Image (tube, rainbow, N blue to C red; front, side, top):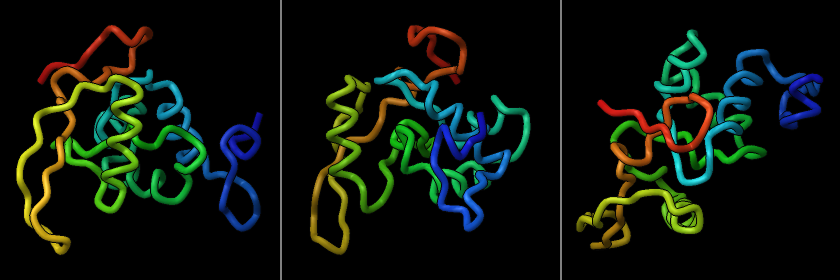
Length: 132
């Protein structure tokens, strides 16, 4: 099965690049309530790096649970905070207490992921967490 059939593609010729297909495959395997960092995904695949994984997710990640591939610091994707918070709460993803932040929209609070508890190591079964 080609990546196009499984994940969809925004590529002009309809073909999903091989690396993108691999990254999206990992994103699909992450269990609900768990996350992997961009670097974790690259390490799991044994190629590329966090920036390459981030680029794939930005270009092609809309058809997979993209909110499960995250920054290493647990901060939510800018501009998508409310959407991902809703997803994380629905999936029971471990979160850390909100901190007050200042931004263009004034003071606000937003939790972040509890990476110690939410991180998944890529092995079968959602019960395995990665520990730093």
